[in-house]
Length: 354
Ligand SMILES: *Cc1c(COP(=O)(O)O)cnc(C)c1O
Image (cartoon, rainbow, N blue to C red; front, side, top):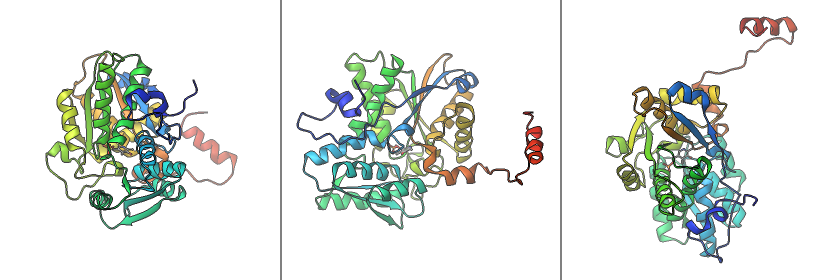
């Protein structure tokens, strides 16, 4: 059968009926890439679930297809969310498909350019607040409680339901459930969703086990690791620049039940992993995604993983969303020369390819 999105692929596991109008961009079915270079380096079997392959470039499409379909089923005229960027891009795209209005609140100056461009071109009403994500979410929660707009942040349980399909896909692609599942943690909806998905698939007899969940936060935005709200979160990984995660409790449950771990990684470690996965595996991910890989590298260097462990690391979003950060953090620039053969040859000589 031709792939037509996560709702049609996994309907029996989702809160939909024959009457639900399915709003989809045919999200999901993303690759699970065997990372051979990194596996050898870390002495584990590492796979990368590349969620940047979704239609708007992040895993948010999985939850948003369900949230917007249910909003339409319930006759909503508009959806609203707070966002560090990817939620707004996804909500805006699916609202466009549904033919309903979308309002997004983003932190002014702290949203990657590509994500802002997406929300705008899909036709959302984009409001940049002079405050951070946590303040934006507080406003959106209040407004959607008091007015008829539908909240499509991951506090909306339909988001979690859609996002859990990534766990199903991983089991289907591997033919078994991995030993460890690593992912970046911001608002903590995704770690909650993955754990729900793995548990449901195992209960349904479609996976042999459930993995241990490994969550990673940026050191400047690590409320769950530190055990307290971070009032002014800071990190290069803007998608996880969150100081008071809405699904804190869900994360805690996932970590407890799976005997998992949550740790933090520095921005330096994030940027190093960001470059490494591009150079060694050919995968361009956004900085938040690299936080998960930075965490796996850190744990592998502490001999945390038993030999031959099967580890899946979720690469949550596409690197092209945030090219500013690439050029700034990695100090990359092209070599500029006159258009003359000998100048090119001298460079080829220098890098030893002649
Ligand atoms: C939303 C997002 C995250 C964080 O997911 P949470 O569910 O908020 O924990 C991580 N990476 C990317 C690219 C995201 O868009």
